[in-house]
Length: 414
Length: 81
Image 1: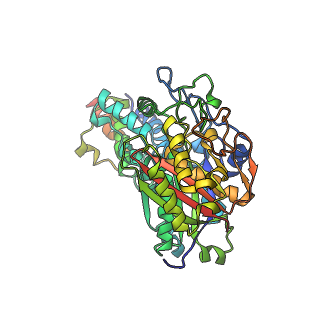
Image 2 (image 1 turned 90 degrees about the vertical axis):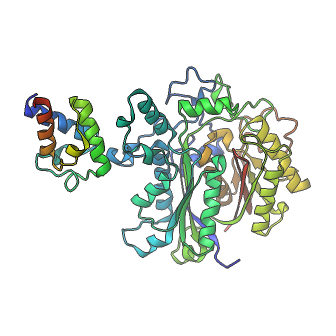
C-alpha cells in the first residue's frame, strides 16, 4: 500500500433518463423511467420491442459531422459524457501540456460498435469486400471510445479498455483508480458506454432469454426484485468520472465528490450467462471490496445493486448480500437505478457509480421503481418507489457481467 | 458527361460523403494538405467516385490523385475514354 488516495472530481453522463448529470439525477430521484417503445430500429419481429433510447441524440450538436461519421454511436455517446466530466472537473489541456501526459483513460464497453458491425457485415454479404468502409474496423473496436477521447482532449497517459460485459465500466473505474494509486497517472477519465439497440444485439440477447418482453408496459418493464420481473431492458448511453490523486485535486482546488476506497473482483467460474446459484462469486467480490476499503459490511450506508430485473440476478444478488452482510443485510438500503435507466451494459457500472457518488454528495438515495410486489426471495430494503434521505458515508456499487465477472466498487464521503 | 457536371457532382460528394466545407473545395485544393482528408478518407472518396460515376478506379491510378482537379480529370478520362 502507499499513501496515494483517489478522489472523484468530475462527472458526466448521457442516458435515457437525462442528457447530463444534473437532469439525470433529478430524474432518478423523481422516479422517472427512461424506457419506451423502440424507435431506432425496426423491432416489429423482435421479442423485446422496448428499450431506453436517447432518441433525440443529435451528435452534430457536439462535433462536426465529418468526425461523427467516423465514430460508432457508442463512442459518440462516451465522447459526450467524457466532455461533460472533463468540464465539470475543470480539466482542459492544450497539446503538449505536461499535465496531459499524466492523465489517462480507461473505458468499459460490452460490445463496442455493434451497429457498425451490422452495417459492414450487410455490405460484405450484399456487395462484397471492396465496398467495406475504411472506417469500419476503427468504428467497431471497443477501445476506440478511449482512443478517440485521447485524440480530441489531449489525454496522453495510460489508456486501456475493459470489455467485461455488464461489469465493464465498473472495472474501468477500479482499474483507473489503481493506475493512479501506483503512480502511473495523476488524473484518469474512467467510464463506459454501449449503444446496442440494434437488431443483432436485441435479437441475440432475446435468444439468451435475458430481455423483458413486457412490450405493452415499457415504463413498468424494468422491475428489479419484483415478483413479476421478466428480464432486463436494453438501454444505450454512457457515463464518465474524473478520478484524481487526492493531493493533486486539493492543490488545484477541485471539487471533490467522493473518494474511491474499495475495488473487489471475482469470477463465478460457472456459466457463460447465468450467475452461480447462491451468489458465492458476487459475495466474494463484495467482501474483497470491503477488505480493500478496510471497512466492515455494517459501515456501508447504501448499496447500488446490479439489480437487472432478470429472474436469476436479483435473487442471486440478494443471497450474496445476505451472506456478506448477515443481519445488516436487512438494515442497509439497496436500490437498483436500472429500474429507471434500463441496462446500459458497458455503461451501467459507470452510471451507477455516478448515482452512488451523488447519493454521497446530496444525502439522498434514488429509489427502485416498479417494485410493487416483491419476490418472496427478495426480502431486503430496496427503497421502493420513493427516494430516501440517508447520510451516505460509504456507498457500494455492484456490477456483474456475462462470463461470470463480478466487480464491486466502494465510494466514501470525502 | 460534361466536365462542369463532373465537378459539381464531385463537390457534392465531398460535402455530403466526407463532410468537407463547400467553400474550401477548389480545383487546385490538395486532399491531404488543404482539405484534411487522410489516407482513410481518400479510400472513402474513391469508393464514392466509383459508386456515383459508375467507373472502376484501380489502386495504382487512385494513388496518383492528390488534388480535386486531378480527381475530376481521372473521372472524366474514365467516362469519356
